[in-house]
Length: 367
Image (cartoon, rainbow, N blue to C red; front, side):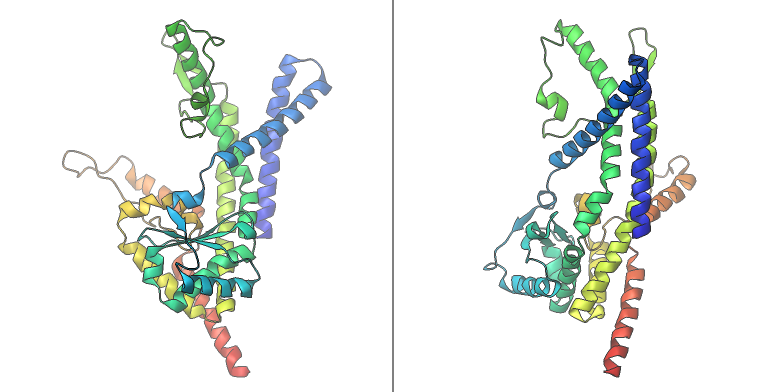
C-alpha cells in the first residue's frame, strides 16, 4: 500500500509539474517578465486543479441513487440492524444507515466519506442468497472498509485521475464546442454578448459537464483545424492510464485487508468464503442486462460484476463475421481487465481465506 501511495504521489507531482510548465510557456508568449510568468503559472495551475476537483465532486450523483437503494429503519429490518450494530461495535465504528436496493443483482457496499455518514447498501439479491452467517461475514467485510478508512484513502489517491480526466474531457471538447457556438451565433445573427451561454449549455441538462470527443473541426474551406489542446490531452491521458493501474493495485490490497478483518471479527473465514462463492455463482446466473445496470458502481461492491472474458460481437447480416483485428484486440482487452480490476480474483480470495481458517484452527488447538 505504501508503495502504491508513493507512486501515485509521484504521478500527481509529475502531472502538475508538466501542467505548470505548459502554462509557464504560454505565459512567456504573453509577457516578457519571467517572474510574472512564474506567478501566472503557479496561480493558474493551482486554481485550475482546485476548480476541476470541485466540479467533479459536486456534480457526481450519489452512489446510493445510482443503485436505486432506499434507506430503511430498524423497525423494518430489526435483525439486519441488530447484526450490523453488533459488527460495528466490534470494529469501533458508528452503526451505518442501511439502504436496500430493489435488485436481484448481488450488491454489498458502503457509501460515505466519513464513518459518521456511512450508508450500508445491500440488494435484495444479496440478502436472499446468503444465510445468517454468510450475511454477517459480508456486513463485516463492508464495515471493515469503514474501520480501515478505505473511503477516505481511495478518494484521496483518486485525485490525480479526477483532475487529469476532467482536464482531458474539457481540453478535448472546448475547441469544437466554442467553434460550434460561434458558428451558431453567426448563423442566427446573434453575438456572444447578445446570446449569453446558458447553464444548460455549459453544464448539461443534469448539471454534468458536457464532453465532446472531437478534437478537430472543419473550417469554411473544408480544411481541418487542429486543436491546440493536444499537449494537454496527451499528458492527461498518460496520467490517467498510469494512475488507474496504481489505484487498481491499491484497491485490490484494500479488499484483501477487508477480507482479513472480517474473518478476524467473525472468527469464521469459511463463512466469508462461502458468501463469496454464493455471490459469485449468483452473478454468473444474473442476466447480462441486469449486470450492466450496476456495472458503474460494481467497483465499490464486495464482488465486481464485470465479466472476466470479453464477449465478441459478431458482425454481418448473418452474424458470422468476426470484428477486424479481434485476435489482437481480445488479448489487449484481457490485459486491460487484469491491470484495472479493482478486486482480486475470487479464487485467490478463497485460497487466502482457507489459509486463514487453517491458522485459526491451529490456534484453537493450542489453546
